[in-house]
Length: 361
Image 1: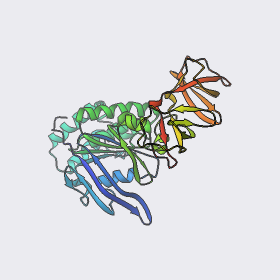
Image 2: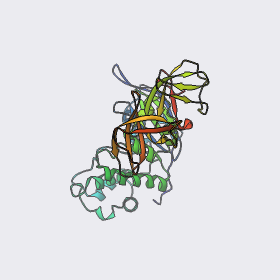
Image 3: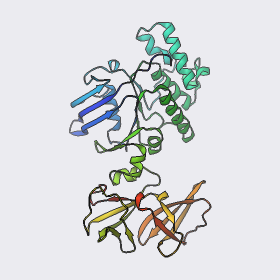
Image 4: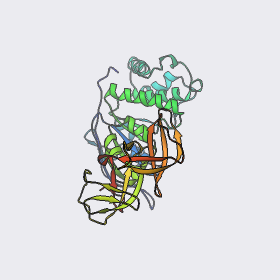
C-alpha cells in the first residue's frame, strides 16, 4: 500500500491474568521485534488467545505492562494502541457490501472519502478480491470472507497486526492457500504480525519465531528450525512435528553411551547442555525422518515393522525396537511390509535427549 509502513515492536513485561482463582498467564515476558512475524503456538486452553487479546486491549491484565512501539499501552483503549486484528470468526456486516465492510471503520474515524477509497482499492488488489467489492458476504466462499476480514484490518494504519486463528474454519486446501497469501503479505508490508494457532504446520511455515505455550507459560521461543530440531522439552518435541517424535527410554553408561535392554548407542557426537552422569535415566527422542536404513547388517538396529502407511511422496513405517515404538519415514519406493525387520541407524547429531523431568539434556 502507498502509505508509509507503520511498524511497531511489542513488549510484554511480567504479564499476569487470572479469571477468579484460575490463572491464565503467569508472569509472562515476551519481546517482539519490529517487522517480526511471531506465532503463538499451543493446545487449547494454554493462554495464547488470552495473550493476544491482552495485547489488543480486549482483556485487562492483573499485573505487568504491555508496550507497543516504545509506548506503555497497558491501560489504553484498543482503538488507541495502533493495532489491527483478524479474528477466527469473519465478523462481517451481512447487509454491507465487501467495499463497505472494509471502509466502514475508516469512515467512522472521520477519514476523508478519497483516502478511504484509495486504501480499500489497494488492499483489495493486494488480496485479489477487487472483483468482489460490490458483493455481500452471503455471496462469498469461506476463503473469500476471510480475505475480506484481513482486508478490513489491512486498510488501517496499524503498527501491529494480530491474527487469532484466522484459518481454523477453512478446509485444508483453503488454509494452505491463505497461509501463502499471509506470508506474501508480511513480506510485502514488512509489518509486525502476531499470529495465534494450534496448528504446528501453520507455525512452522509462517513464523520468523515461534513461542510454544503450555500451562500459562512459554515453553520455548525460537526459530522454526530450532524449535523443530532442538526442542526445549518433551512437550515441545511431541507437539511440534507430525508424526510426533518417538522416544526410547534408557540410561547413560560409561563413555557416554545410551543403553536400553535391546540397544547401545554411542553419544560421543551429541552436544550435551551439561555433562551427563553415569546411570542417569534419559529418554532418547528421534524424528521419523532422522532414522535411516543401515547399509550393512553389522551395526544395524533391528526394528520389526507393524504397520506401513503410504503418504504419496514417502511412507511411514510404524515399528518396534524391542517393546519401544519407533516411527520411521522412508522413500515411497522402499519395499517394506508388516512383519519385515528393518536394519536402522541414527545420526547422533540429530538426536534429542531428555532427563527424567522432560527437559533437554
